[in-house]
Image (tube, rainbow, N blue to C red; front, side):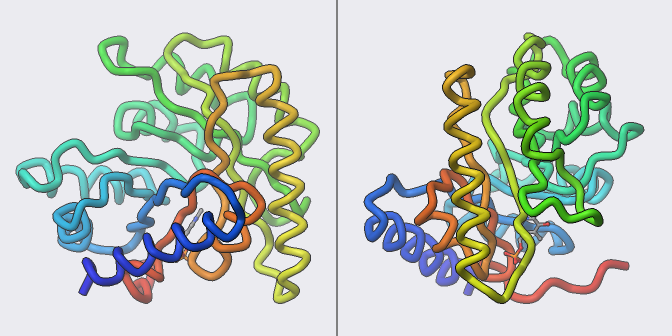
Length: 230
Ligand SMILES: *Cc1c(COP(=O)(O)O)cnc(C)c1O
């Protein structure tokens, strides 16, 4: 079942990229609220990169998978809001943190990243629709945050992430993706280490790919509907 869903999503990524004349983006499998067994099944089908929203949930799942030979060498991305008091733990559990949206987090992540591990990959989360209720920095703040991340040797500045508002008007969603691509190109011009633009989810990743996403975050289309959060 999961193997079939994975193949179908990979095919859609490939088709969307080909139609847009862009390279096929990477696939982040969003496993929040899914059991460790679902991660193991997708890992067995060949998927390596997994996204989690809650630090503690990820910690539990990683512990469950620690002895599973099929789940070795997975790449873990934090894609949920990061509280300052969880930053140190996140810096040890994850390979990527996609939700750096304020300056305060940066020294906390940098100091807690173990020196014997590769640098922690960081994306700056941008609130591209400027919604008061959402996390993410304002677009004009992203460059200063990028500069701050780049100054720390234990962090690797890799790019930007966004969760545009789920507007029913697809053209407006597409506009938000396009604004992210413009911002990404502007900041990447000063930071050549930036190679990742994370945007697009199950119901809009084709639009995101058309506008230049290099990494799409897909949960429902891979795993089916999520169980409710307990
Ligand atoms: C849950 C989540 C996703 C995946 O959403 P789907 O609609 O299930 O594909 C992607 N990105 C973030 C930040 C999420 O929280």
